[in-house]
Length: 413
Image 1 (cartoon, one colour):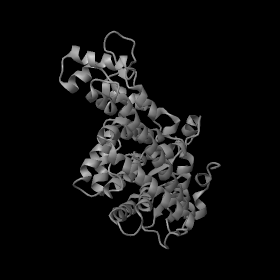
Image 2 (cartoon, rainbow, N blue to C red):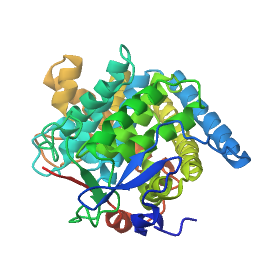
Image 3 (cartoon, rainbow, N blue to C red):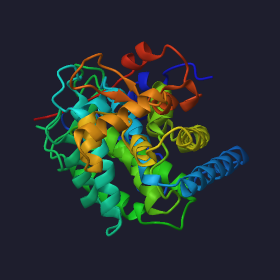
Image 4 (cartoon, rainbow, N blue to C red):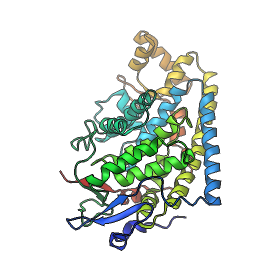
């Protein structure tokens, strides 16, 4: 059981000038202390003990089972869309957004809806960035250039969009509670002159496919990116996307089914603390164990959800006369009659008839209570993503604590 923050409350002065495998704190001319990361891989090498090997083995097996379930889905892309949306919601919530999965689906039905949270655009951008990045990876390796492109997509037209989206920072940034400055921040990443060589080393490490097992490689890359913090805003979301892109590029996953942000959101305080422990006590090994445990737990939960989806599909196919509409609902579980009309190229009365058949079968539920502009929800399917079984490692009633441990990114103009 994790007892709370520790490293993030410590003073960086204790480590000023002390070299570690992870790097060292260096006092800058302005008086603050920035962390200069050492190159990857860590030297001296990681101490991979038996506990780490056991966690790695369990995580590998669980991830393999998740990928195996993906391979037997009748139309994987239909189902994966929901996992991508949920990862987008959870990763964005780590950064303080309030939008939910239902909000994302409502936006896709009617992006001008008056009741949607203002930050919905950040989540939708995340979904688009995932799809864009995976498409680009078919032709290009993961690189600094692609990372900048992804960042540009994430921040386009949303909060942080004025902070040079798609460009690495040219000024110092810092991380800590709202309103902090360079002298009161929790953590100060490397200044620009040290950031650029650190990024070059990270890019080389991303292409190193031989030195470490894939999951340890992902853990190291994510932590190093978060330490470098190369953007003024949006670093956390990009860093978590790196995990997805690495797993897909290395062909460990055929589809982005691992929603690791659910684990990181629930354990947000420990997530930040484990990253800080690398920087203040050289604890790479503790971070790797935390990461592997998350991959194992999320893979198990995602596999169970995928199997329930298959069972639901088989059950509901026995109850409908238009199976193509059912397949569409697994891709888009919140629909209007107009959407069904557009999807199948049929008349409005025909689309309405199809939808009413699904309502009568108990598959769709009307959600507005209106006579016009009605919307219909595939509740049995959405309930799988809202169930505690979707993230069984999540404690209850943690929303207030999440808000308290949200860190902010700041930088000089």
